[in-house]
Length: 196
Length: 196
Image (cartoon, each protein chain N blue to C red):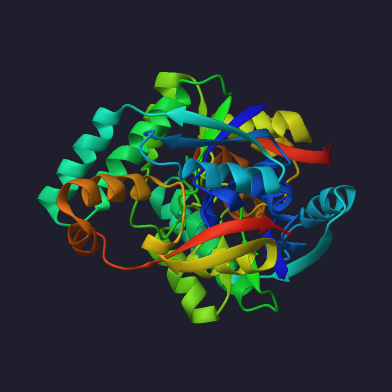
């Protein structure tokens, strides 16, 4: 069975792929708006881990809407959620038997409810799998420690192919770097450099 | 890391074990009240699949309470849920770094909420993992088809080491077989005979 994993190059989506690779033919799929080249880091990690890799180009109007939402809210959560749902819809339209992402039990964003999962599956005739949704924070941390080689640092210094990097690039370009630090308060991001 | 999987010999808990075996040292643990010998079928399946196996004896007072609940309700759901939670508590007290069960996204019973999972982890300093909670019914069915050898039939003809079998035995003994068919409406159960 062919499985497409929505892939950022971060620890969660890498672990999701590792959990499923015994059961599916896994392709890592990085969704991006063509704004930055951050997707290349995801490709490097995918290749280092021995997975097939694809890019999925998203509609740039969706990035614009997310940026507007984040400016209105004053925080990124809802904008990120919108893009994640859009990316899953687009991934579901590709030629996979099943799709997956790295959402975890304790994530605040993105979250995919049981109803959203069922709707995605019914409309696209595809299985949606969230292999980490049954893992808490400590369990994930322990698996990361055991299986992944990672670099950790503040969001703005870590090159990761998640949507946040491209949204930050738009906002920095239009509103200046101080707007980015205000809307995206510092937090640590992890970038996976290899798999043990 | 040592992981104990709450194990019935059914397809869900067998798949849960297969999903985690690359990441943990897995022991399959069948909880039972000592009422019937159904746990031996779970041991056979565990052995056939190459897993370590243990029995976990539960307090028979918990079976009595569940039977009373089921009689009051007229259906088994809440009684089964009570026993499942009790079994997880007892499993969490054992010498494992992590515990797991076979609960799925679309299960009506048993269900473990995010709050219950967190509470179990905090009180027992153990990771609780529900590896199938991110899988819908179709995804599980496809994995079962691909990986497990199964026998399917009505509940009363399938020897499985879930709590239901022992509860049915108590009710049949005390209230007669017609009470069992009334309280446990026919539905198909699956018993795993091997792993591909």
